Image (tube, rainbow, N blue to C red):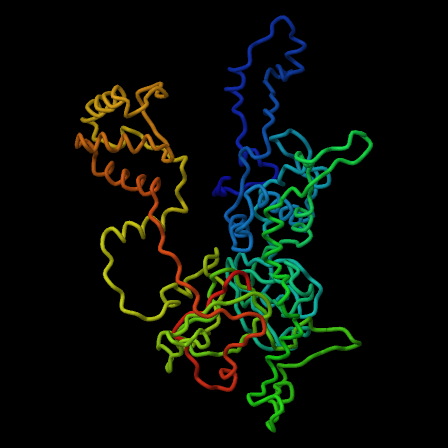
Length: 546
């Protein structure tokens, strides 16, 4: 997979993205055939002008494919974290296919295969070529993507600009902006996963500067998950006319998305969100009249529109926002003053509670931090995502405690854990990079001596350019030998430390035990709706998808 080149890669120029065979090299490799010149012409011999025309060598679909940064933005979201690269690639194929349809470009010439391609007949293992103008849909300022109650199950991913999420009379465009989505954010996860309803519960419109958004079709996901292959472990029928025994092709991904669907015995229906709008703090049979936000005089945000027995505005009452969080994402931040109440419909959350509270109460502060003034205490879902996280630094998610000094060993571990995801076992360590130029001969002599003593295996080294993979434990012997001989350069010492950490990673400290786990039906922040100042000192996070 390659990052997008600076030049625009057009469908007609996709050879530049996939890397054509150099004609001079091909002519040099192909022997002449003087005995059969006609055959030579058929194979691409001299034309009437004397030039040589060769068809490019056919390649596997993976070879040289161009993926843009915006492709990675979509496929690396937490939503697709549990998917294999092969599955993501086919999902990208479906995304591009929809974008080609939307752009009216269903036919193009592919020089890599020297053929006219159409979306209808494109092989299932090939992607439409990368074409930047086709990525996403451009929206003018104020243009709506959807309105409340629309039957729409597409995932909406913001590529550029901003998109506003509105609730309250959402079928007519919405009254209250509850969230501004930026690059890397997405909306419509519940409809995309089929969690509850396919109706939108909000309105989405482009921000003041417009936006470009990308769509992922739910149908593309379900078709992939339903693909089958012949079950090699099952006994196949002897009669060739009988259908073979098959199994699901993407078993891991099927299990993963089943987990995300939150279809559990304790899950609540969307209609249960109505409980957020009615509050009776006293006993159920007490004399107090319950507070019903729907009946408050003068309010126009909250309503239930069930015209003709159907939900016009979607499965939620008007004025209530729905959000989906992934494991360990922040739901309520510590520090800012509470500005909303939440009801858990599906899944669980875990919260920090004070000692001696038996897991029944949350840490509470009495005054909002000055730096958090004006910020919502509701998490934005950007923890661990590809979105812009500059607005919510992780330092603000933790309780304000005195930071203790970190010794050098802990700092090494921290750096290792931060850099680890970008490092692979296929990286190479070159011997010449470990020592100073004047010490190369001495280093080789020491390594040959180690090989003679049986410490090191140099039998695979065909040249003097000795190299080892990061994942090869033989490289540890190389470091030890050169370190004992005091031949490692400063860079070599640094590289040796990094590779040793890679091959012998430090054990991470076990995560703290969740001290409070809240499930479906539990509510937080009821007093915040009445203007009572509530400030949490501890963070509330998702325990699995919620």
